[in-house]
Image (tube, helix red, strand yellow):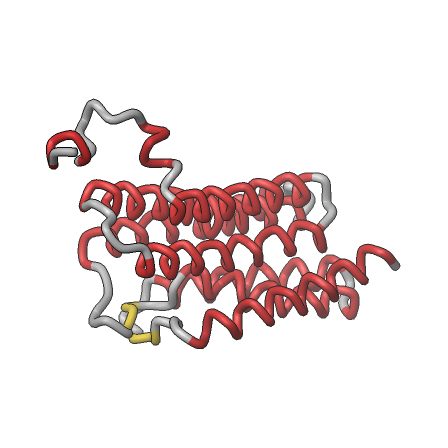
Length: 215
């Protein structure tokens, strides 16, 4: 087969790119984020958190899979980067914003916080798409997926507080993390063995939240 035949072009169908294994992993993360939104709207918050944390796991996984696959074209890599960024907007921008709105009973007072979450995600992802990492192991500002990792742990203590108090805690936490997302603070890019730590973290939290759902 010639190079011209095997290399994708603008005539190549969209689904040809989407079926690339790393992109399928990204789309699995999108499904988890959608489930997070769905359950948040239904006010099934433990189930929503499960969806959100699994979205993080798939977000980390797609990059690992992409680096292990040999022979991917530049077009496949570029498509994967764009798809990943758009899905990140849903997983780490829209989904947490909807969660905050729902937990606040969709009060108008929670709209500014939700907007800050979404706007911060758009600003950070746009910046990252242009400038990338500071170096191979360092981000500028706190990565958006770290917001969900922290949030999923904090929400374990929700039952210890009155809803009005905990909604204020969530609001404050999300605004604080938004500031860290856009700050010049240098933060490490977790990779390698940290992926296995995330797998354990995700499974443990899933078990705990499933137990909460069953009680």
